[in-house]
Image (tube, rainbow, N blue to C red; front, top):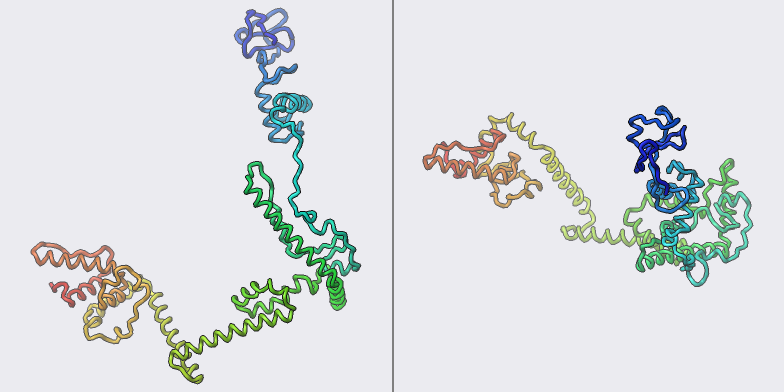
Amino acid sequence: MSVFVCNNCQTEISGHGIKCIECPDIDLCLQCFSLGAEVGNHKRDHTYNISTGPIIGAFNCEVPWTLAEETMLLDAVEQYGFGNWEDVANHVESKSPEQSEYHYNLYYIRGNVGKVTFSSDPTPKVTDHTCPDGPLSPSISTPISPIELSIQEQHALGYMPLRDDFEREHDNEAETLVSSLMINYDDDDLDIAVKLAQVERYRLRLKERDRRKQFAREHGLITSAAQAAATAAAALPGAKLAKLPTIKSPQVKKEKEKDKEKKLSKEDKEFQDKMKSFAQCHSCKEHEDFLESHQKERELKNRIKDLFHCRKNGITKLEEVEKFEEERLKREKKKESKLKKLGSISQGKRLLMASKNVVEEEKLDILIDESGSKDDEDFIETKEMSKCPGYDLLSGRERKLCNTIGMTPANYMTVKTCIVKDYLHRRNGYPVKIRYPSGMDKTHRRRIMSFLADNGWIGLT
């Protein structure tokens, strides 16, 4: 390792120094350079470079690499990939692509680092996890004789005879089972078993797809479908055969089934979806008859249920059913209209209406009296009020009062407690003013006070 000595003060340069470009043998330390030292032909205005002194590298090589350059080399190979030496050299900046490639291969691939990192064992053989009957796809090893079809018929069917494939196969989404599968280094035995089970499911679905193709070929279904497509194309002049739906295509099936599905209820659709697996055991007509029979059975059961309901309500003649239904609908509409009216009026509207009718509402004893009135007969307890906490603790007249002024039972109990306690304090001689919740309407206060006074909770003052 070479040692640099300052030509002016003759001391060893450690760290950074100055090297003259015009005078190749002149090296100066930073202190002498800052003082403007001139030695021999060297002048202070000569151009210069800053040298770092002796380079300490990670490897003992002819052209030393600094530790920073080694780090940048490794980062560049990781970022740009092995083999992109131009990008690696641009990242290192101080080395050429050839130097970067030579240095990396020499010390990181074939050197001691490479021997420890890369194992010398050959790559293990890939194990075939498919079934013992043959390869993964059952149709790969089975030679087929192509079906003779014209170009127009092939386009109409979406069928490729030489490959024996359709543009849209049966179970067309089967490949999604294995499309995202990959073997990871941290997979345990359970993960491997699950992935193998997915591959097995994919193989079985491919086998079913091939079985259906063979059945269609053996029974001439592909040829008959092609002839039907050609006939339909001839009947529609100017139509594009490539876009023409055929009898066996899923487009035609969807168009035929749309009209039926519009008339079917949700339960019928779900039942038909469940029964699709049994369609292979029936002919087309038998399967349709089976679905129609089930629909009739369900309709009869619903009719019997309705008749039992009528019998339960004392109806024994069909002539009385229509009248019963009319009366029932009227009652339901009446209940719905009353509930809508009670629910639509918000508490703000109630307060506004109450403030406008202060004079009429001061006479609470007329509205709430023991003898009762027409309002009591038409009173309907809302579902919202009955679900409020504390509703069971109120009497019948208190419930009517809360429903009339739109106050929850809990708020009413609080106001009632404060008024009764303040009244008792005043009776005992304490100068107490009756307290009310802030923001409480004056009309509601008068109603509650009149109600408590009429029922003996407090005395009139």
